[in-house]
Image (cartoon, rainbow, N blue to C red; front, side, top):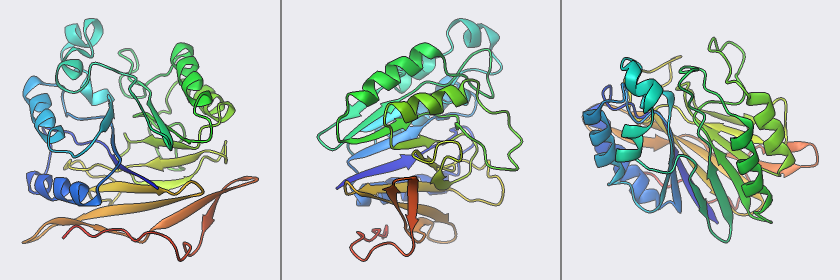
Length: 278
């Protein structure tokens, strides 16, 4: 089995500081094989915000795979935004904008969807899609996971513009045999197959720490367990009060069928239980 913890949209500069330690403690107790953070480490891409995000990252256990979000390039400093958009991200977070993690059971590939000319909606070009497809096609029987900040499909009612190149990205991922796409950006958590491509499972993380909450959702992160046949996804939700912490919601289980991903209801009895962060 492999376990991925999926965080997103930390937004240092607008974080609930009371949740930082509980979040690190929850992730540490879950003992992930990989922690994925799908962008927006900062609110305004300022140096002190990146330094705070780096300090948080240094506490995350095990290997970590990160991709930038649109808030990780300066909005209010046009010189940096157009000429050196990823300078601070590379200095504090990761010099690789398309990182890859692989072992004998999974291949996880990051995709940079941030574009200086499409700051809010993002863009993915043909060159990046070719590199992503090549990585996925070489994964053999392993779980194939793509990580990108901007979603490739929006649920009904989302008023943001869909990323440029989203349809082409879905087609490329489907053709290359990808299994799972992890995204952030909207501060909404959920898991379901893409409507356009049912063979791809779309898992979206809400915001892990930000006070910029939307649609009535609180702070969350995702736990993803894969035993080779079934994906089990648990959303962990923050609770505040005298002893703030993150606590698991009921686990969803998904199995790939001939027509795409099928939700198992209830999950099979051999599902590994989510571990509560005590």
